[in-house]
Length: 90
Image 1 (tube, helix red, strand yellow):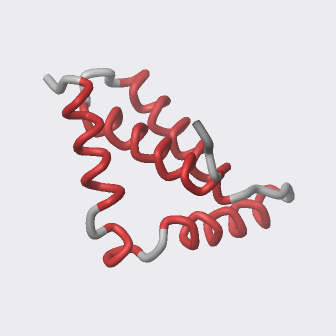
Image 2 (spheres, helix red, strand yellow; image 1 turned 60 degrees about the vertical axis):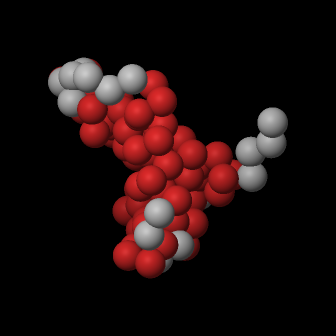
């Protein structure tokens, strides 16, 4: 069982660690995904929309198995990346 700090720390490790080295910039990656999804859906999506939609995907998985910790961690990570991409302010 993970506590809230463990969830956030793991999400931070995954999003702030070597993620950019392995996968490239999250913002650039999300922009590419947004362009592909936009073309497929015939609507305009942004990079931060990708983060929101990925978080919703994790929420759907949580509904099926709320005890699976990775979904909570990933949802937190997508929230952090989306907030940064959107330029969230306190």
